[in-house]
Length: 460
Image 1 (spheres, rainbow, N blue to C red):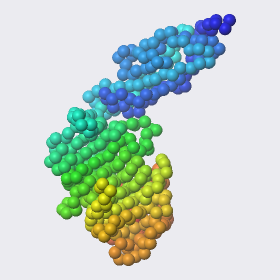
Image 2 (cartoon, helix red, strand yellow):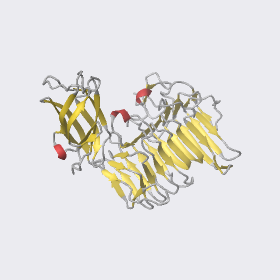
Image 3 (cartoon, rainbow, N blue to C red):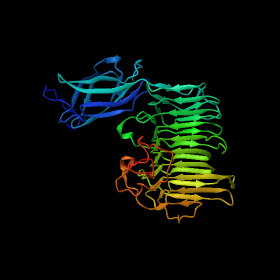
């Protein structure tokens, strides 16, 4: 009796149970396979049940693929499920290029035939054509595969851009991104601007240029580290980022050594950079001008300005409420040196100016000033609110009208909303500025007052 095979239930009343009645894929890019979705088939009976046939309704023409208990195909037959047992069903989709810029709804279904019954699991995906930037050069020295942008070109907003590997703006070329352009970057992908090249981002309020990871499922909306960085390498020039949203990578913008004379390496304005595993801005002996920006929620630094440089940040909000792991580093770190072969080499910090800005987070000290030797180390905070244990009494050189440790009362830090509440101590605390619009494109200062607020947003 112990070797007797269980009877197979054949009653027409015996039906399968499923863990879901439908499978939905978020936006899937053409030619790029989706993530795998999983659901379960259950046999609720005390006897085995046989699925005589499980198949995609559109057959071999389907853009979906199924695998049931290790077997793949558009149609599978005679699948036995033991009593009170279950099976996994894996579903993927690859969207064929459509030639249509707007998203396309793709539907199909898996049909299960059991004991004369038909049961359906609906499949839905949103397909999107993209401009695909994939490596065309594969170095033999082990360095990263890359593709070159070898002419002055503009990326438009008619459909998204998807980067694999390194996309490199070559020497003496300018890559312009028009308002509303969306750039998705695959795991580890980097947009690099090479010596002599330039990146110019021309977004606008409500039509920001967006950089984010290529995983579009809702579970990934706030997951950091999904892509590499925007890398302005030494010798790149005249880079501009205006009205952009840059999120969920490793480093938002890395700006490498450029010298301090002449034009800034980067003018960074009206931009939000958030959710980076390392830093929103990582500058190495660089030259940056920035205003009306929010730099927020990073695993190490929100801004790391190392090896000296020349920096001017006005009307910016630096905030760190990182919750993905334990954070031990101040959100703002400034030094004037680097290590080489065990030797400390100093560089000039010509200027690091922070005006009408907020520097606040969850640590007791959110600013770290790390000076080496007698090297030049010029920094100044004027009309700023700072979370710190440092003595920032007015000295006319480094600190002027600095407000220490008062909660700025952001609207909702868990939702990345760094506007000010009505009772915020940052209201009407700034100096007069020529930056006459805020990050909401509202007049600065509030028309009812002549004094600007601190940070990227005016309250009214």
